[in-house]
Length: 114
Image 1 (cartoon, one colour):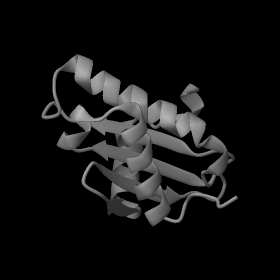
Image 2: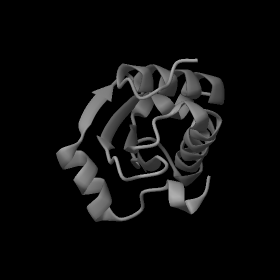
Image 3: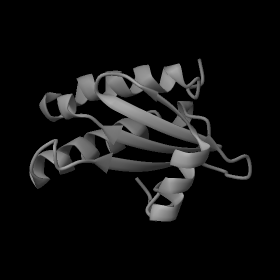
Image 4: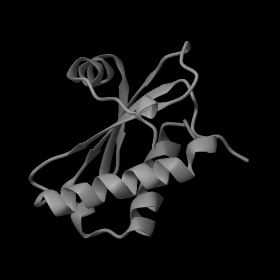
C-alpha cells in the first residue's frame, strides 16, 4: 500500500479518535472520520504489544494492509480510518482477518455495494 494511503502522525491518529466515530467486533476496533476534500482513504494501524512479539504484530498489520488493498475499490474515498487490533487477531489467518474487517467496515456503512 502506498504511503499516501497511510496515517502516520500521532496528531492525525488523535484527530480521528477525538472527532470520529467508532465501531467494533471481537477482533477489531475501527475509528473513522469523513474528510470530504480527500481523494482517497487513509488508514492507520495500531497493534499493541499485548498481541504478541514483533513477528506476530507485523503479520497482523500485513494481513490488514493486504485486505484493504483488495477492498480498495469498495471503500469510501473520503475516510480516514484507524484500526486497532484486539488480542484474538494473533491466532487468525488472512481469510478470517479479511472477513472480520469486512464485517466491521459494513457496520460503518463505508463499503460500497456492487
